[in-house]
Amino acid sequence: MRRDPTVPVDKTALVVGASRGLGLGLAAELRRRGWDVVGTVRDDAGAVEALGARVERLDIADGEAVAALRRRLGGVVFDLVFVNAGIQGPAHQDPAQATAAEIGELFLVNAVAPVRVAQAVFDLVRDGTGVVAFMSSDLGSVSGNTDGYLALYRTSKAALNSLVRSFAAGLGARRVTVLAVHPGWVRTDMGGGHAPLAVEDSVRGIVDLTERRAGTLRHGFVDHRGRELAW
Image (cartoon, rainbow, N blue to C red; front, top):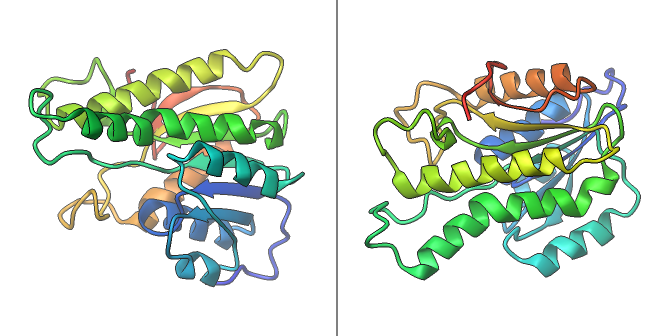
């Protein structure tokens, strides 16, 4: 899908994890609305290139790769940085069975690395109207945990939410809106084929949300419809 040439481009987004699923859907929706997009991928870049987006290679778990990405981005100014990254972790989801390697990978990829990427490119985010958003999950709500489902995964997302709040609390004089976003239960590789929500519907709501919240400085944990969620 190419950008509609009749729509003027005046906004730029960085979508981290754009090769497939929600990340690719976000990149496509932003391009449809006339945004310039830089999309990062680990391997397959074909789908992102087909959108007419700039493609950058990145493994978010690799700190040196994150630093190299920042150098390659140079002086680009981003109106939106959306970090879309996550793994489900071990199939058993049992803390008693999990190895140190499994726990380390899960928390690095789902919680620490997304914030580290945002910190690395934060100086490129437009002051005043810029938005930094992270793909979270309603499973990351500590107060909403009533069944223990996907115990390790949901704990990693709760850790992400806590780091997102710390990130927002440490902005200092910078005027940037920070969001943790629950995309809904979406038909992706992780969400499964029985999920009720199509990628296109989820990302349409997410982009609407980020555009509405730009410039408000209203940080929060919200779903794809903009509804506030309990931390």
